[in-house]
Image (tube, rainbow, N blue to C red; front, side):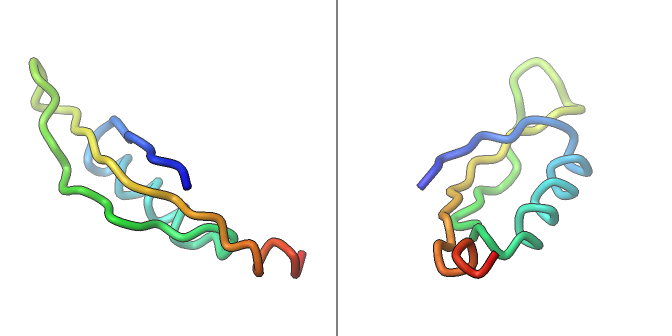
Amino acid sequence: MLKIRLQGTEKDIEWFLNILEYDSRISVHNPSDPLDIKGTRKYKRLYLEVLRNIDEEMKK
């Protein structure tokens, strides 16, 4: 399992989450709500866990 922090605009974070969720080799768990980054209104941060789907990797 990987614990990942994403930082960027809400639109960019949403875009990247869609890419992660589309890939069948991994599964995304426990994404947090977008949190403010101190000192800026434009950028947010989000935490999530990513797990490998070993069964899907073996198919390829």
